[in-house]
Length: 73
Image 1: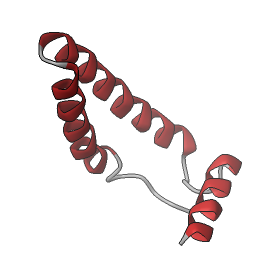
Image 2: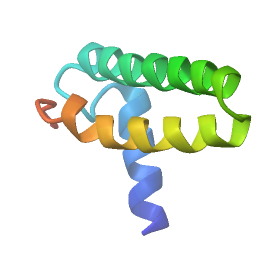
Image 3: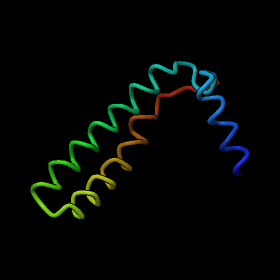
């Protein structure tokens, strides 16, 4: 399993994992930015631990929606 992970990482950094690496990076950045915004806003409005939990749930739930249209090589 670790070998499969390493192979995927190598393909990703070579630009051969996704058909359009820019689209994958753009979608990842959208998810990262939204999760960061939620953790910062909820961390200041609530407790920091509640902000992290809320942002983790939202960011994890958002990933399948963002990555549903990605095509692999």
